[in-house]
Length: 118
Image 1 (spheres, rainbow, N blue to C red):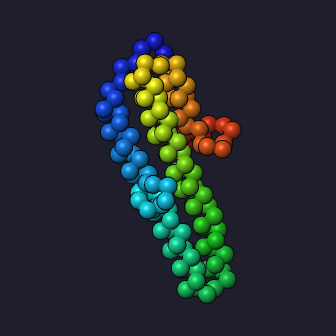
Image 2 (cartoon, rainbow, N blue to C red):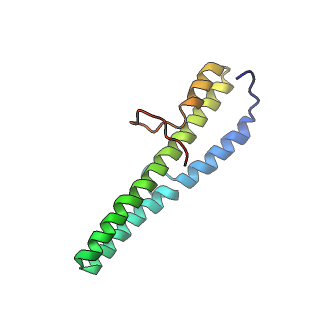
Image 3 (cartoon, rainbow, N blue to C red):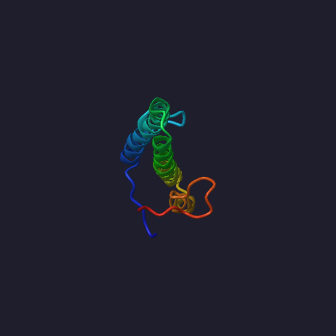
């Protein structure tokens, strides 16, 4: 990369907006809050249904979709965190560290390989 020309305030605004939509670690806001609410709602429906076939179907649905949404949340948090870190290094004038942080922005913590957008 020969030159960067980043509008830091605009980048920070976008990252704050995206982070707000992704939500917090406690699952009280944004997509993470919706994730927690979906899990609780599925448990409520399962309890109210009192049916083995419905319980099985809900369990399969939850295993698949809660897994997918959980991965979306983790990847989004990783990407915004990595982009923020790269921007901070850019501001501090360390372009090599900024490039490294940008390259690792799609890494999910605990995952050995970067996740590719679908």
